[in-house]
Length: 250
Image (cartoon, one colour):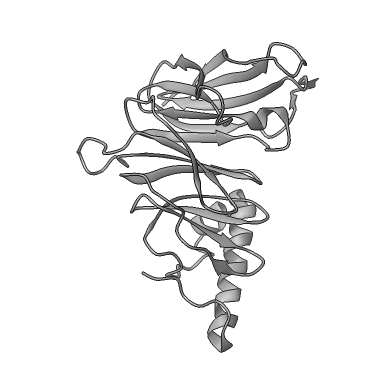
């Protein structure tokens, strides 16, 4: 499907309505899920991107869609316009996407229902503004199921994370002038979800500026990890640590 025009006549007004509703649904995720379960949301189909959407990530600026074709494409909330496909692509479906103000991070592989080997197990870093490919990371041995980017204006903007069905979490450098691999750790099972903890507080305790927390879903466990700098100095190197895990009864 090709991007539909979002800025002409009556069709544009309809497009604005569904686009506004979609943005609200993304920002109020728990309420949206509850309303869906109660039958309060009706399904609509709008062909906006050049291929079917497999994954996405969004913020106040827009939404970046990971496509079945292996490409990525960005929707701008303000202009309600869809950009061109990002330069280059994965060789398999885009399974997961993360973004910050400057970059987009994506992971690829088999979505799980084809019963075939993955054609691409890479993680790719893109310039969000131009769609230009900046780095391609190779290190996973099975489908990449989760990626994390930190705020680009902080010290953690120099690194990113990926995790996959190979039970590995890998810490990468976004700096093109250094080796990409920083550190990795093994989980107790396949990782199907990876998410940064948004707050700098854990319980009643404030985290230091040299540390961020990440949660990983690994089989029937939730694993808490930390990305931690050895010190506050500019040349300090980040570390990847497993702090603790919680078993979830199934």
